[in-house]
Length: 342
Ligand SMILES: [Zn+2]
Image (cartoon, rainbow, N blue to C red; front, top):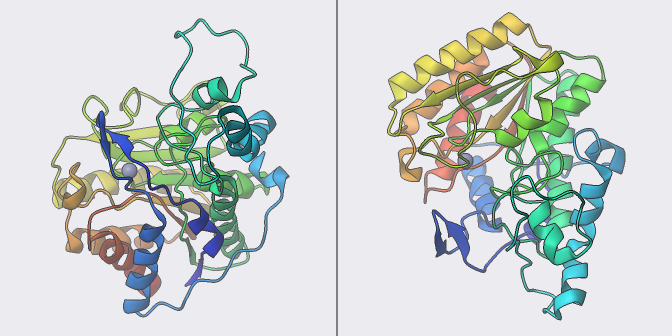
């Protein structure tokens, strides 16, 4: 199975504390995650990934607005000028408009950091380059599948599924999976996005909410309890042309493998009914018990990989979350081993 990764992605490597459940803790989404996944895949016998081909601005504009892309590219430099901060300092949002009261995009980068985000994720000097390289991996995997591959894997980090058309948060800046899906849809393929991350794919859902050409399915922790909150309820189905094209499977905290696999079977039946030409899988493995939402273990990840492979549809597998010590690399390798051997 072809896979894609670029060392440029390591340029986004936060070190300052990150607010998690209201507490400032060491950052969890760091360059070390990619190194761990690479080691896990090598140990499982996979070939080293290929560097992806560069992408152009028009590819990013398939889902993101030009003004957001401009902001993301220049934000760190503008923030340094505004604050006198050092080159290796991390620019963080800290203020947002009164809900419903803001009528215009602010001009100050300090205000724009809040305007274009929903969380406290930092923008670093290397964030733009890294996030664009992460997108390039997803695009390369989509192109490999379009060219006839049965499956391809994009080692995307920073991840993407929480990023909206003009909003970053949840460790995500550019929506890798959504761009891969939109690229295939723009080339007249029917596409489904299956989001297996433990957290609702809020960015992906928002991007396609009013579109019917990309079906989205997300299986995730109950949004009453789990990040990113506010959405991902079972009655959210899209609107306009997208009405009925979007599907949510919220599950209770601590859900075990059997229950999870049952929900996955329902999700896969929904996908099969849509008869997509390709499925973009947002592969988060933070469903592992180690990450505290569900209680999946190694064998469950093998079952997930086998179930997805049984769909018999071309798969663009895009990395999302997964953090647990020694289980991130193990679980990713388990899913991909089943897909590669199907
Ligand atoms: Zn997650």
